[in-house]
Length: 185
Image 1 (cartoon, helix red, strand yellow):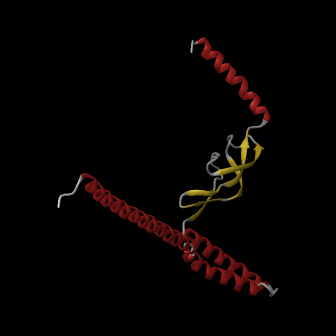
Image 2 (image 1 turned 45 degrees about the vertical axis):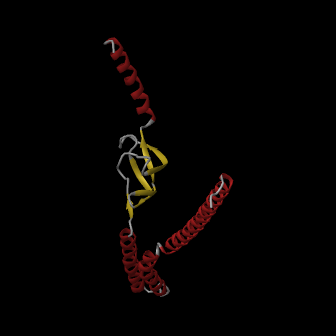
Image 3 (image 1 turned 180 degrees about the vertical axis):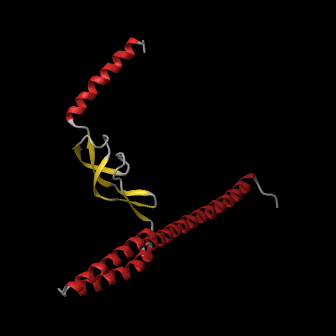
């Protein structure tokens, strides 16, 4: 039986309509799968973040327990116990520093170096002629870096020239400019 053009168009339309419906269902399925994937990854990331420091905590527990033992011995007032307490605290301090370094925390000092705003925070200035200007002459707090990134800058006091030296420097600078201007520079 021969089909007319209208019947052929209707059949073709139904075929395209079924294909469009299947594509739309595949699209909805893909969107749902992606949403489930996103939720699963969020949950995994949250669990990872929650337990990311687990190894650090495991390493810190013995240090915490050593501090507790030291504090328990601190209640006795005799001199021998105070010396033992001091020795114990020094051991725990070294243990804590070693554990933190193992996990990437490093301390640094800027004492005696030129001030660097990337690693230091200036909290004061001292006028002196004993050290060059902008030299760190005192450190209030050490600086700390984690995985080679500064997470706490060192807090420092910086040397600056005394008032009479600053005035002496200014005339030299103007003399150099005059000399340079005489040379045509």
